[in-house]
Length: 130
Image (tube, rainbow, N blue to C red):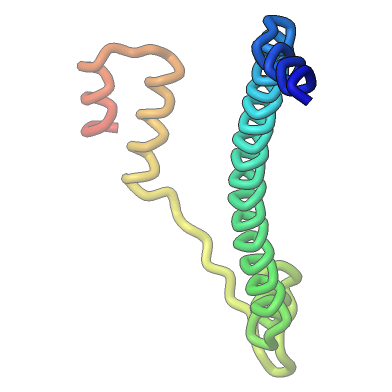
């Protein structure tokens, strides 16, 4: 029995067991670090997906609101009048066209001067006198 205890003490005190334990410890640390990195990546991806989810939910809500608005009678009538030129029975459509006003002429002269690269002094002249 004394020899068995001494063998056990020899095994525990041996360098090979020490090196084996060091290898196991290093392997355990490497595995733990890899797991921590994996968890960090997963948390980042989860955060990114949650942000994307909230944006999609917002877009979905806006689309649903737009669809709800388009299904109202008021909106459908407005589109029919503006885009399709329809009218109610007995109604008369009046179209008002804008005449060539002084401000329109000034805007045209400014756009003309921008295209032609006319000096600033001439631009002012055209603005006030043409």
